[in-house]
Image (cartoon, rainbow, N blue to C red; front, top):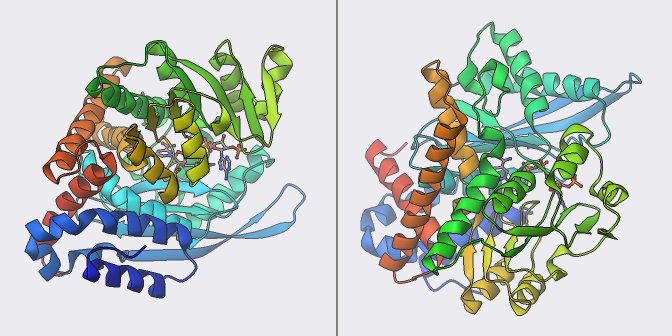
Amino acid sequence: MVMKDEKLESIYQDVLRRNPGEAEFHQAAREVLESVGPVLAKYPEFRERKIIERIIEPERQIIFRVPWQDDKGEVHVNRGFRVQYNSALGPYKGGLRFHPSVYLGIIKFLGFEQIFKNALTGLPIGGGKGGSDFDPKGKSDDEIMRFCQSFMTELWRYIGEHTDVPAGDIGVGGREIGYLYGQFKRLTSRYEAGVLTGKGLDYGGSLVRTEATGYGATFFVEEMLKVRKDSFDGKRCVVSGSGNVAIYTVEKIHQLGGKVVACSDSNGYILDEKGIDLELVKQLKERERRRIKDYVEYRKHARYVDGGNIWEIPCQVAMPSATQNEINGKDAALLVKNGCIAVGEGANMPTTPEGIQVFLQAGIAYGPGKAANAGGVATSALEMQQNASRDSWTFEYTEKRLANIMKNIHQTCFETAEEFGAKGNYVVGANIAGFIKVAKAMVAHGLI
Ligand code: NDP
């Protein structure tokens, strides 16, 4: 489909030509371009200063070799990435993803989305993302440590508390951040806690950071439901994935009175009509690093479906929390047909453009990732604040700040969508509100 605005269509054609083969990046760029037409009419200086052309081009892209040895002494070579996308609002900020599917197009899509997400938080952070095509599955602790050390042996030159502050994402949790931080400290002889977020609580981490993305996404859905005079109470929910985001999404939904009946990993899903036993999932996934299918060994009434599509399970609230493009047009139609009234994206870009159209046309509450999952990076920014002031806040205080930030993001997206003639469309609201904030700062900084 060709965009209505010819200039935007031509910018998109340039994106395709200059970034061949990067399908996920094309998808993320197109979604933003499709939203910002009305902004250019209101702010002609953005067009004159070529803000869109500049925002779409990363400030800096770093690609490096990561050699490491496994426990048998065999040598492996992976590829490392850090895309420093936009620093108009603060130091580059965004996670590191370790997954075999990682290539430049994935890191660029994530980095591009991160610019607008970070702007929405209202905190002083720019956008970036990084990672590697390293597969942490089945690796020993020592292998993970050696890989992280090798990765940081190159990355340390480009990061710093005022420059670029990485965090976790798929395949990068507290263990990996610990090894990365240790190596950074060794190479630089600096105890610069603010250089990474998602750190352990013993060495500068923030309470609630582990829970933040899942809790935040659930708060966002709660706000969308409130607009519709509804709540989580008694709702049947499905949450895909069983990693960091999924686990704390389930936890918060249960605290708010909803019932999550299914979650998954890349092999299949579990269905537990009595409600997911979260302590068991934490034991299997966080402590023992096992597969989700093992759940049914302990809960005989539950069912494991190998290779199954989790979106076939009827639910009122769906929270995709695994990976990009996990809900296609067909899945979306099935969710709507089965009575789904709200979708909140814990994952980044989990719904395809066709799926998004289905949700918008059905008029259900649809919270896109760049708004709904911003609680993770927002709490990372709170971790940076605590590091800068050498302070540590209580769980209650930090969670309250997170809840407030999510409320504000929801309100900003809701009001911006209404202002630009798209009431109830959080995609338009999030893209426009994030874009305006970054664009104004870029205009102020001059042509750089
Ligand atoms: P984890 O590595 O902790 O968990 C990822 C989960 O998703 C696992 O259950 C994994 O299953 C599943 N998964 C990953 N890749 C695929 C795939 N290709 N197909 C099917 N399932 C898959 O990562 P997070 O929970 O941190 O991240 C999940 C999503 O949330 C990502 O999209 C991430 O970008 C996004 N996000 C994360 C934030 C954070 O703070 N961590 C912040 C904002 C967004 P398996 O174990 O089988 O691979």
